[in-house]
Figure 1 (tube, rainbow, N blue to C red):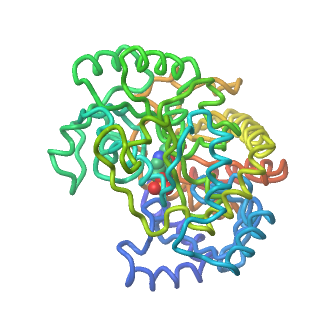
Figure 2 (spheres, protein in one colour):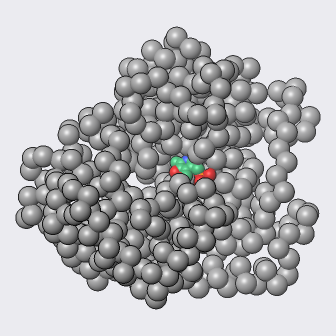
Figure 3 (cartoon, rainbow, N blue to C red):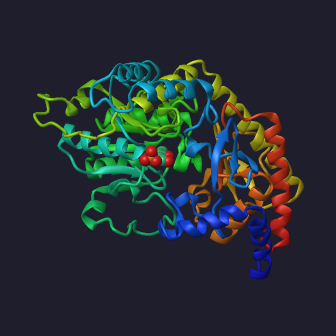
Length: 454
Ligand SMILES: Cc1ncc(COP(=O)(O)O)c(C=O)c1O
């Protein structure tokens, strides 16, 4: 690849999105690197979109894009679903924050209890990060133990303990700028999909809990299948270790009863966010009543876990969550999103094979993962995992320059792809899928013209 060539996609991109470029110049004077979430950083500049409806978002230049970010996975129903909009508007007119217990938190909690097998008790938080943070503290308080086992590459939010080891490379000692060695020394890492390694780590470290990111590393870069989850449930039960399933992404998305419903397991605790709050900020920890008692006053553990949080169970999030979960319960959103993603994975692999491309599509449920360095026959069935599921080859650090050029090339084709992955929703149509496949085909041509090896 050559700089001269790489700048060609950039030049076309700058021509297509001039107002975004202008906004970005303002943004760099406000925000570090001009963005408010690391994943939105894009070279030469990110796009700006104020509007989104169904499966599309509209940029400030009025270009309509097929969206595969879907609110970082939160918008399973599609953008601005009428039932959610109506519920939020109605609530906003009454109160955005009564600073009191309110009826919508009851309705929201009851829906979580009805849909999530492990949800005997619930505490609402503001995000998935807060939910996994709460889980660690509950587990430590309930067991009196300190260590935590985490799978290499699994993402559980950005708080100190669990941000460690969430990204490749995996052949190094995990550190994170700003996280102390003391915190790091409490986290034990095991390879994904390796029950024997989990058992050894449990015997060696006597942990407070083990966490698993529902259906695998970064939402399935290294997929985890039901048999493994059942084995993990059986092992943790036998060893008497608390098993926390992080369903921040998979919760309500893959199945109305979440990934645990699909796998037919009941973890001890579950972290939820995203779809839970219908596209507004919100999360929760749900779990066994005896463990969640750690949050109660006068509880049997003898110590209470302190849990403030100004916006816990905020009524706007609760209104959106109740409206969304009522639709989730019909199973239509997860069925439709899963079906669309399977169609897209298949049609992308057809194009990649026809073009002898190094790109490959794979994934489970409504996730579509792209690996950019694949050789060999492209999958012809949807349950095939590239490299035979070898996690060290699947979860690699991608070429950053290619990543930016790839996203820009797709944006030029009318598709907003979420890094190297994407997710579908209830709103994605067959027309979206064929247009997206065409955009990928054109993007490969553009990238090759720019001498990227794709
Ligand atoms: C599996 C998983 N856990 C936790 C989080 C953190 O959630 P939040 O971004 O709401 O803090 C995420 C966010 O993407 C996630 O994917």
